[in-house]
Image 1: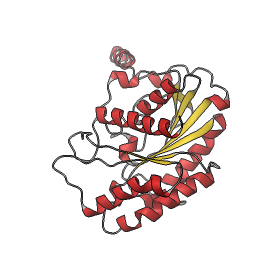
Image 2: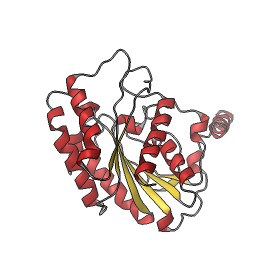
Image 3: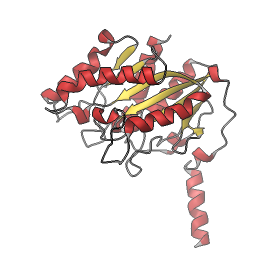
Image 4: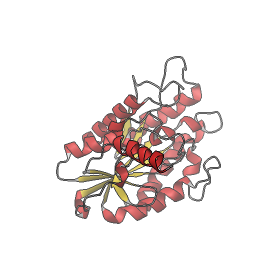
Length: 265
């Protein structure tokens, strides 16, 4: 039994699966630690296939892990559904921002919950599927993380669970309220808020309700200051016509980063 355990540990180490346990360098001064909140549903959490390269740490890109500790940002970063999580957009986003901002360290705060409709992102709301309180849990994690640095942005990728006849007509009001609530609760009235586009994949045309949700995302920059829309045009799915594949998540991270850097040059 012991030889088998030793072999397994060696394999995990070789593939980088212990990357999160590697020593974290001392945190930078607060003003040089730029923090980003990652919120939404499964396409923010990430469902792409993880490779050893996705487990390679970058000393200037950290994540606030499930236990509330700053560790190297490696995939899978989220923990909403442990059996399903994988590569997402967050790590690539962080690395791109770090490259563009040589003097800072990036801190990612993963809080997305797969399958969560926007109504569960209200105070006290409960998500039955994951037995979590998405808004309350995100606020708890954000407040625990923020003393270490400065909140620089909120990344939101969500909408599939609201693309139905009951929820789609309410989506605009709910999203606008959500943005205002984030900014009020986190004392960041002008913090950039970036909303990503849902996937449009071959063989699965959008319903009228999904088009309504998409229009809400697209119209944000014209209706609310310090917001951006991030296109998912041309990206591909992992085979389920819902979730992006790993390379598309990485490209989406690059697009979020480009949109953010355009807002905050």
